[in-house]
Image (cartoon, helix red, strand yellow):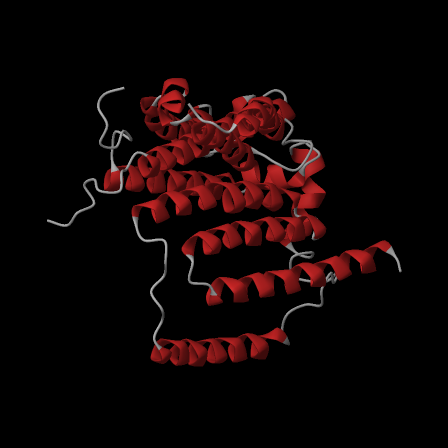
Length: 146
Length: 186
């Protein structure tokens, strides 16, 4: 187990706050600076910090690698999916007003929330996947030429 | 001194700090120190973005530059040597020539740039103002940046997400698709 007690205790306090801040940056993005990209990055950092302090095995248990792989595809899929839904509902591609023909703002708000959700999902998953790919390697592993 | 002048003073301070950190990064051979300094560089850049009222960019820069890229560079460094090979004198001179030419080109173009904070700069006129004018009526959210990013320029943002996705797929394919390294099944 990790001998750095101070790091463990402090990060145990901080990691939930980092996640809370990430979700705040996401869901408050219509009113304050932030949005899907920033939120996704902050959430990814939270997972990376957890992996650094508690080890890769604990992190893989908390956020399995398959989740990251599916997440990055799902995020892009959601974004494009919103575009196609608005296409099928009679608007242009990614024209969120078409999502709700009666009330203009609601359609825009729905579209923005859905799209930002996709962005956040994709960014978080990609960051975690890249980190797992890097951290999973060992020094004298399959890096040898041959 | 009013508020704008104080923020401008901070801008210069941050720029000087970035310059010195950049010089230190060039001079150092110890890669661990270089990685740490790039993290510091990103953190100061994030503070500078806050001073320039670009909070969106600052959040991302602090998390990506100071957090993720530092960790990734450390992970990559552990796989190689901790020391940089000394650069040869020829490469120093070649780099100096290239940088002098590029710097001269930048200084030549400097005269065409709008003055810092100018109200009639291209960013503050034309399409930028149109977005600010139309967002309350068309989208009705207070953060115009989100409106532009997600709605007016939704197609661009979709491209960005696909670029991020492609980057993730590329790294996963190059390094390890399962993300599990050489260990056994988890």
